[in-house]
Image 1 (tube, rainbow, N blue to C red):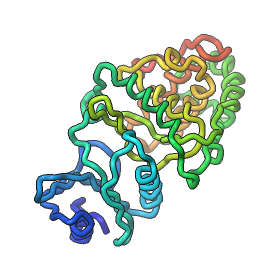
Image 2: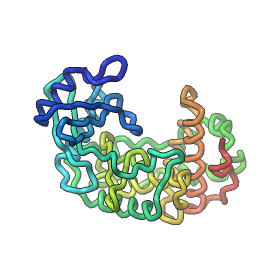
Image 3: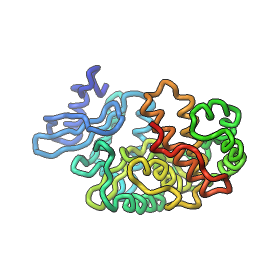
Image 4: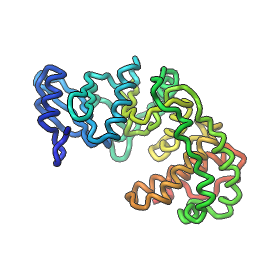
Length: 304
């Protein structure tokens, strides 16, 4: 057990960290960003600090083992430095360098990127695609699920979102289905598979990607396309201007987020709004990249 019911580190976790690093933890606090149920920045008696992430269930343990495999086997400043890997308790614990002093775009309201950081991210993602992935990572092909054939069967649910007119949907549907079927997901490159502003930070010009739990082997273009789908909301470039040939990716990502907006009805309203915004960003991108009718639907900033 890593955390108590009220979210504090247990004595077991305290003892594990002290034993592994040979120094006494004196301060524990939760980071501002990140969704991990048991993550802490730990201060030690000697003035040093570390980031601790502990698994609280079997799914989290699986993801943490994947992250450990990445950060322990890849020699690159693109990943956080691992300080310790602990499997002495019920579930594993990963200890990494403390990156509090870095600039985290998502640790601001609104999300704030500094000048030049989008280009730094794009360069970093090209470098990620050149890193050797662990052979144990699953293939992107195994998890690929086309979305537009499902949307075609659920047309009323999609149209109820009000993202576009029925006329545009009818005229574009065949092209979206075809383009998504041609998404080049295959490959043997390392793919982070969850690139977004709360999973990265900047230490000067160094870009560090965190939370590698969903890493796969595939086409490195996938990370770029996924990032581009969200960046306009945060002041970033139009995806078409960066990846004009990305129409198949745009079609697939649009389908993913449109279906989530339609079906995840128990999600908070703000999150469903984000899903819809990403969907229209990608539909507009797809319409420019593919032989589709010009986009006449909502603009992302009009969805509130």
